[in-house]
Length: 211
Image (cartoon, rainbow, N blue to C red; front, side):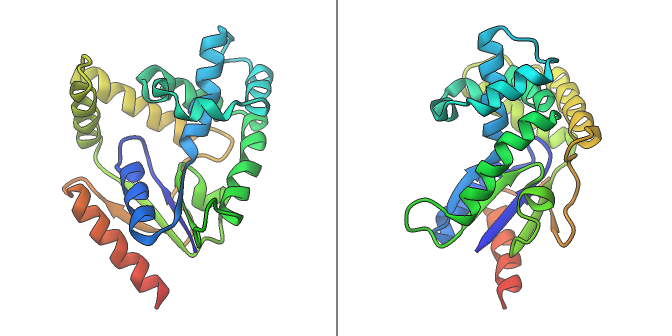
């Protein structure tokens, strides 16, 4: 069973994907982490994020170790990831990895949950269940600020809100695989939901799809 979860930054899709995978005993892949890893690799090498060819080289030689790096969750890395994700060279290198993961989940998992920006529209268009998770910009900024504050980092709400809006524009207007609601997906607005409520709503959608 393949479940895809797409949506904008800080919509809650990552938390939901992890919890669904645990609840249903499925493997989980945060596809956005792959793009963040490419971006982090470029940032650390001091390479120009505007160089598509260089980005492609980093994607083709990506070290799996970077997927466990704490710096993946930094704001700077997220913004950079949105830029490199536009490049066909990068997407081509990472698409095969994502599809292989879905086709052959690690361990004894009987399926997988993939979350990102194009998992239901490009990576696994034939997924059994597709969710599109969203929330208001204000709520997403509040969540991001709370996350940063919990880590002891500075969090200016206005700045975070502006960064999320900019990220949305980049993701929705890029030429390659822009963020869209996949065909056949069910929309789940988590603006007023707790993580538990979002999980319950998603499980109900999945149960209905499996009948």
